[in-house]
Length: 113
Length: 111
Image (cartoon, rainbow over all chains, first blue to last red; front, side):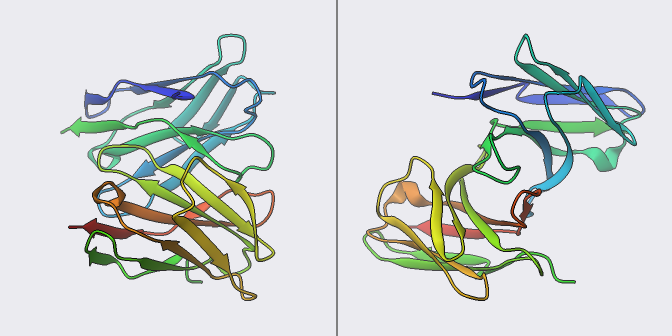
């Protein structure tokens, strides 16, 4: 049973455009929702995270939107740059932030110059 | 300040063998988690260690075991290797209640 479903599997965006990746979860006990960025040959790096008591969080060009009733959250990358080309993972956990993260399957993002 | 370091970076083993992977957490972190990432997939949680004890475990068989040492470093052991165990094994460290930081991983190939 996949507890966090991520879409799309791959995404191509023009430089300067907005990249949008969506995730849906099933377990209502989840209360911490991070996004990770992974480059080839590297481990995932934390980008931004949100808790369900807020509907949006913004850090620089990265924004998380959260819809608790729909059990969905999304990552928006504004003014997308070629250096943003990577694989992005949404994740979720319950309790302490670092406890047993459940990851989506990932989105391979390509930003075309 | 060194981040999370894992060794070795690459490893090739034969089916049926045993393997030990090592992780040194980020300075000041007391909790270590291990994840398995198959090619083209998201990481899957194996288990977490805190105060030298397994605190939480994912859906992995008993062939996967671990250990945490007093200096917070950790080992992941896999017995009776299967071809399906081929993956990138990631270690993540954290300070209890805070975000997890990942190492670069150990690429294990079982032949």
